[in-house]
Length: 403
Ligand code: SAM
Image 1: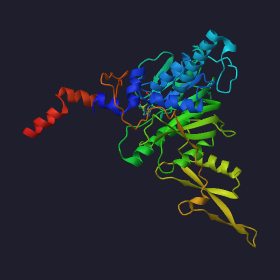
Image 2: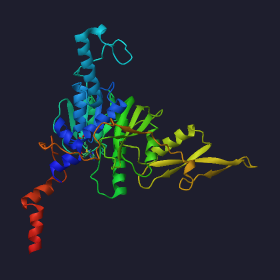
Image 3: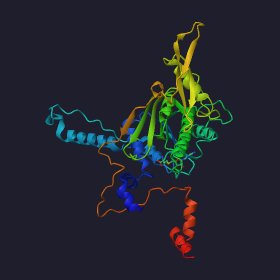
C-alpha cells in the first residue's frame, strides 16, 4: 500500500503528518484527554513504550508549551473571538444568545509555558530527542528499569537503597505498549497482558496517591478480570475507545483515576503483581470486605494469567455440629455468581472527528507527505537492508523462479 492510498484510507495517518506528530497515536491520547481531563493538575509524567514519541510530543506541547488541541482548541478560539467582539462592540450593544442575556467575559486561555514539568519517556527503541523530555532506552518488563526511572525522575535517588521510593512521585503514567503482533490472537493478547502488568507494576512504584494510569489493552476473553484487579488500586476504572482507534481493532485503553493503594501495600518489581499469589491474596482481602460470607477460592485464567475469585457461600446454614458446609461456585457453569466487574465503556472524541475506519476522498492537488519521524531502529530494519542489498524481494523471487 502506497503512502497516498494510506493517506486516503486513514485520515489520522495523514493528519498526523500534516500537524507534525510522529505517529497517528497522538490523536488517541488527545481524545482520551478531551474525555478524562488527563492533564489537569499534572506536572510529572512517565510515558512507557513511547517510541517513536507522539504521546511524548503531546505531553511536551500541552504540558510544557501550554498548547491546546481538538475540542479544547476550538473552545479557546471561540473564547478569543468573543473577547475580540466584546472589545470592539462593548458589552451593552450585544446580546449573548437567543435568550438576550448580556454577554459574559469570555475566558481566554493563553498558552502558558511551564518550567516545573518533568516527563520521562521509556522504550526498547531509541527515541529521537524531544524538547523537555528525558528519554530512556530500556525494557519495561525488566526490574533494572525501576531504578533507572527513579533516578531520571529524581537525580538524588540512590539505587543502592532498595527501600527508597520516588521522592517526588508521579501524577500520571501512560503506556501505549504493544508487542510485535503475530496474528495468533491468544498469544498476542497474552503478550499484551504481560506488557500491561509490567506497566502497572512500574506505575505502582512511582504514582502518587490520587494519580492516574492509562494503558493500552487488547480486549480479549476475560478482560473483565483485569478491570477487577485494577479496581483494587484505583477508585475509578474505565475502558475507553478513542475515535482515532479503529473500531475493527481489539485495541482499547484502560483509564484508571485516583490511585488508592490498599493499606500496607508496597510496590516492588522484585515481587511484581501478576506473578505468584500477591494479587489473588489482595483480591481475596478486598472481597472479604464485600458481602461474601466465607473465604474465596482462587482461580487463574489460563490465557491471561489473571486471577479471579469465586465467592464461596455457606450452604443451608450450620450443621448439627455447628459447622457450615460450603459450596465453591464454579465460574464456568454459573457466571451469574461471578464477582467479575465490568468497567464502564466510554467512546471518546467528537462525533464530528474523522472516522478511523472510513476512506476519504483527497483533493486533486493533494501531496502525500513523508512521515515526521521514521522509526530509528525498527526490528525489520535489517530485513529491509538485506532486501535492498539484493535488489528488492521481487527481483530475487523472479530470479529464483527462473533458475
Ligand atoms: N505511544 C507511541 C507513540 O505515540 O509514538 C507508540 C508506541 S508503539 C504503538 C509501541 C511501542 O511499545 C514500540 O515502540 C515498542 O518498542 C514498545 N515496547 C514493546 N515492548 C516493550 C518493552 N518490553 N519495553 C519497552 N518498550 C516496549
